[in-house]
Image 1 (cartoon, helix red, strand yellow):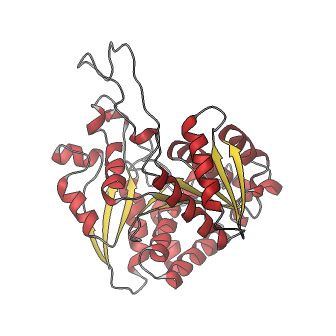
Image 2 (cartoon, helix red, strand yellow):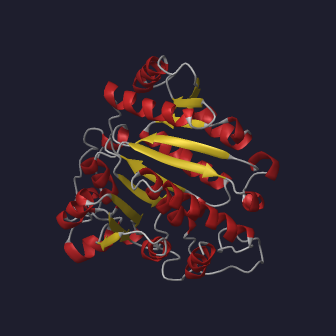
Length: 356
């Protein structure tokens, strides 16, 4: 099983190292191959997604990804910014379905920004469409001056679009996922304002006709954002577009106690996937050894389940994470005020120990 490991920028190298450490003790025949991506790749090779990195990812059974981005790259032209690496990987690998589970572990209910009774037992799956929407729309305007992005430009624009096949395939993924869970899908749109999302709503409704055993509700994105903090446990599976999914999944992350606890999987139609924590590169804490590696470790568990056909090994990792939390170990982001926190490496070591 060949795994492309792309640590990226900021805390990416630290957190990915812990996930690889955990996977190495499982006793499986994993072949890890590392490559640069994001700002690190731009610095070394002049492009955030070098050809060699892309070819490695395409040939791998799965990709373990850290994070990309740093403020020092903000004045680069957009095509060369670190974030273009992840967009390029999604496009070239055909990654269209992003799974972002938001689970509030019993031991972390006090770390959530909401009252414990609102988040205890929380288990939401956000299914985000990845290849359409405004992120892949038509040109975003024009730059007049080389002094900085859009310096002196009179306007900028982005075009939102979705095709019927794109909506149909993500709707099928969401309904099938709901069949394995609570059999309820909430489709989030802005159909009252945007024609694109009236189209989305209509197509999702059509696809639902083939899933009579799954409940479907439609909800405007502003109401969904409010309900996530008012009554989050009313949701089971949320399916939505690229931009809304980006925003809502980060909001849902904070219900769990920390975005450092939120893994994600991005899958194509062949089951090949890119696995990454939902948080960013956090350059402000890079190199300090305080980042939470659990989202990356849990992303590795999702890799085992969805791309490598090792569901039992995924269960083992997830159980080990629960055991570590039950032992009271916390990194700084999930520690109670004034409580002692363990380092990134110590948390990874604890998960390894819990695996036996």
